Image 1 (tube, one colour):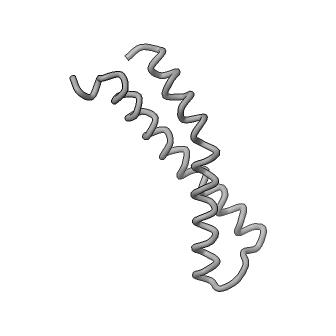
Image 2: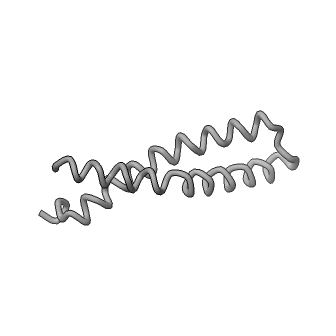
Image 3: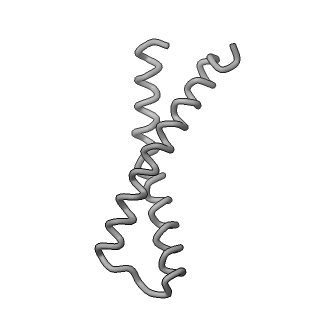
Length: 77
C-alpha cells in the first residue's frame, strides 16, 4: 500500500463524516426522545452529537479502509 491509498482512505472518510454523523445523531436523538417521552435538553443533545461523531469517525474510517482495499484489488489477491 502506497501513500495514494492512504490519501484516498482519508479523502473518502472526510467526505462521509458529516452525513454519517448527522444520520447517527438524528436516529439517536429520536430514539432517546421516544424512550424518555420528552424533548431533550441542550446538554443532552450535545452529548448525543459528541457520541454520534465518535461512532461515525470509527465507522467511516473502517468503511473507507475496506472500500479502498476492495477497489484496489488487495482483498482479492
